[in-house]
Image 1 (tube, rainbow, N blue to C red):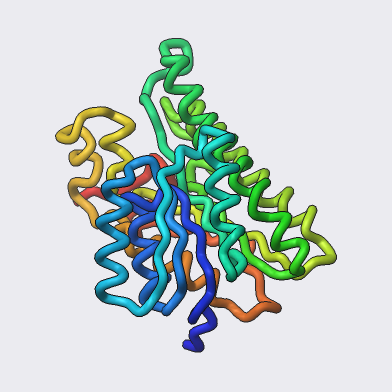
Image 2: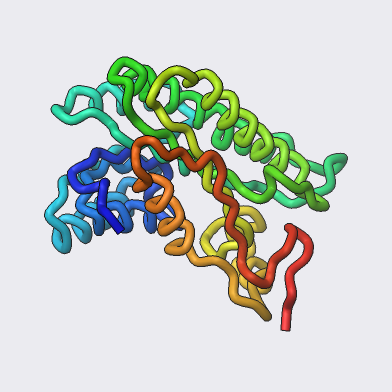
Length: 256
């Protein structure tokens, strides 16, 4: 496959673990230069050192909580001062918090998900997308979820945020009509990362979710993101949904 990502400039949010960390490594393997944002600076710095040791790419890291507009604005300003523009923005920062029926839900959990999954994506996109429009080039890839296509019990607010990401992705694409700026989403199903540990606040319970079948790995999602980003400029993959072979809906998983 032709490598169109060599020397491109990639911004990945939520890059300290899970999908974001794997996405960063996958782009570095293609020779792309990286801007990595996350809340956990120590993890970002360890990833930065690892990638720079194994790859001939430039890596810049910043401690950013995408829920904080001022942090996002300052971090974006630092990125945009660099000589190279952002070619690909991967809006990966996101989480699920809590797993309760709606009438027993924790409002703090709701606000965390809305602020991260929805408002954070908007804050980052609002800073970076205008530079792509001005250049008439660039690609925004939003990490969504099958939870944005099918609801499931106790998913409620998380489902709502991922449905919103799906709607925003489609709306962004329509707003980019007449430009060469591409808008895509990569929407994974069950994947064994820190996601469920964060959601359930119980490592043992989270691990049981992945017993009896082969879930997606973070690297599988990273491969999909790189594939979407690497398509020729005249090709736009609007949505890429991937699930484990054992999973046919959020609630249908064939456990052996």
